[in-house]
Length: 119
Image 1 (cartoon, rainbow, N blue to C red):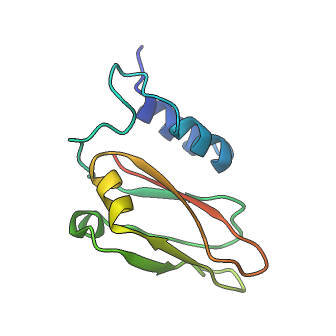
Image 2: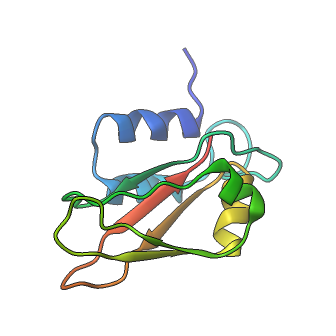
């Protein structure tokens, strides 16, 4: 069975492999015969993973990706402190093309890498 780079990354994220490793793999070229994050894809289901997570939550919607307007997310969730994550218009364009972005949260004694990808 053949698997595209995006399918492989989703498998790794689903298995709980470290986000830093996924971010590194996401930077590699595509194994599906095309360039990594080739334009022309479409984002039907944005998903996100937060490295070193301890209760933080981020939800990026398809409508937000389509709007492609920079947005700041508060990712507090059930954690005892908050962080913000700024997704730029350029990040949304990458996601709209089926790509993956890694964004570092604001500092609150520490930071989190947030990986957002689209299918």
